[in-house]
Image 1 (tube, rainbow, N blue to C red):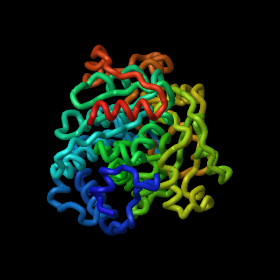
Image 2 (cartoon, rainbow, N blue to C red; image 1 turned 30 degrees about the horizontal axis):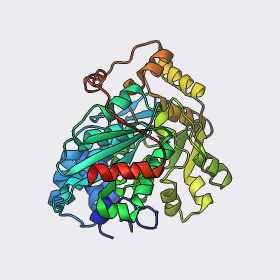
Image 3 (cartoon, rainbow, N blue to C red; image 1 turned 120 degrees about the vertical axis):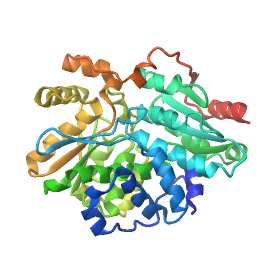
Length: 422
């Protein structure tokens, strides 16, 4: 399977997901000297191994320089607790890494095409904003973002609906799972795909997932001298972020353990406990980017472990928390460390607190997946302190919302696509 085909198709015909055919091991000597490498150099080396010559190395370097041009700093709260800040990109969320990389890669491959490419993306919060920012005004590409009405924060909604240009928002009267089902149905409609060049920018697309592995290496680089086992704590919804961490581990990064932290949409923690995977409708929470009842990337996790439950649960622990517990986590981090954390990162903090009580002596790296300003109302209520809103987010606050309302049935969505793009 050519990389180009996998990137543009998003999903294969069998409704599965694309995976790397192999994980070539990085040189242990290179990893031992990882602190001597820049973030861009790390991204290039990881990508070069996974892409195995599918595009010239000189072009790959340029692509990475354009996409990975903002930092992923690790902040130490104490000797064990560390925060990996993934919100320094244009949309203030971790998904900027994947979205910007994918935009560059698709733009590179799309130069050979005459027909316009239409990207469909379902979002529970941050994905849409990152994709919108990453693909804004990219020649030859249109972006359609499906989001659940009333289930994203006001500023998140503006990131989806206020940019204009080649970005179109559909406000779906349903859940994230309904949005995702519409996108998948479109990809599986062969007649529709014959009339419209479709691709996806969700983490179901392998081009979104690969760059998310870069910052695991970058975070490890920043703590490697601590000489303790490194544990990554991953707030999880669709489980693309954790799967990217598993990719990094397969490539040779010495990660001791993963912790999957979820809200009450806890199908994966339940699976880790019981060995039974039971998808169910998602429930709205204050950590809305994780409101996923049937995470797509779970099948990739199973594939990496040969669908063996015992192997999976040995490497990954699962924890789930309610909204009230999440608020408690925000308050504890603020009171104890004077650090403002968003609801998703707070779940990660709670999970690591529970894990290290039984497993002391580790370095915990909690993925802080979004800037707390994106959830300022909830965070300020808990901390009793206003959250500083970065200028690039604040300027969207008063921008007009432009979105097309739509139900959850596939036929009207299909007709809308045909009318708009044919």
